[in-house]
Image (cartoon, rainbow, N blue to C red; front, side):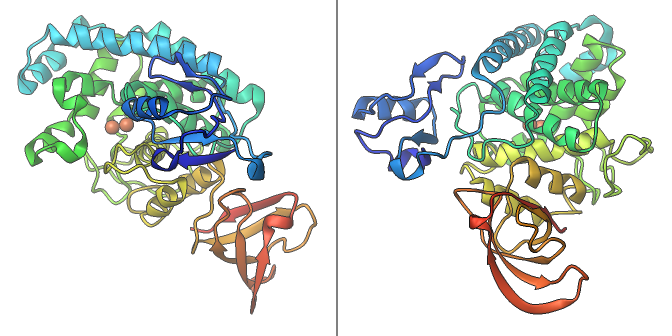
Length: 393
Ligand SMILES: [Fe+2]
Ligand SMILES: [Fe+2]
């Protein structure tokens, strides 16, 4: 099986995985032979990449982090949640300034989000992830753009939970992080039709208005559950940056690992929000939400890594590369372990990213295990049974 961009799919290609529409209903089953009409249909539904069968890559299966059943249950609950929030908000004042005033002043009156439903969804996702002990995501996301707001919510939550796990988050913390991830953009519902517009189509003024969405998310959460202080702060801060150039408060980041013992400090981004920021940005890049083109995991990770320390906490970026198992070309890596025991402790530059097995790139070794520079030596990890690399940022 291999992933192909929809433009390159040909009539007669055989579908590798089943495809679901934005309501998570089965559209086409795995094994289906594609026709001109079905390819058109997929285009209409916003699919950008699909898996097709290919003898050469017969053993390569996309890794499913969350089974379709759980995804479907969560998707149904989340559609319900998003729709009911949208409906209730439509009864409130339409001008953003008035709306903000109402939400701020009468916060207790707006119990918009059925928190129990959200909690069940998060528990489902965490259960799946912990049970399967998954540490990586399918490298190439396949999904449709319709209904993207709640799909984005689910994908961001899964990625955030996978990252949180790497920092030894306990169950209550994963729950809090997952809940915040599912609801981080719920405030966009308060922005009416602006929420349906693509970033590229927005005017300068509309983009500015869009920046209010994290504040709305916080207010909606506050009204729905006054005790959700941590989640409120997490959603409020998901567009903050370590260099202080984020919004809405221009908080700063310490660029240290988001560990539990790290206390929340006034003026500094809360650790859950830093994880959410990374998961959110990655999903926006691969889904095409960010700039209209859907990035490959390689280009998404590369562009994020180039902003390490400025836009994203480097410790969390390192965890992201483990979750999506990707080492971009030109990045520096350290060999943590290999199946053969060779090259452990060495460091080098990724010469060629491996598009079939993401975890096994070609590395140009530059330093030995005592950190002493060596004559560069090319190591092709494709032949190795298991390789554990760490991105040096
Ligand atoms: Fe957002
Ligand atoms: Fe988002």
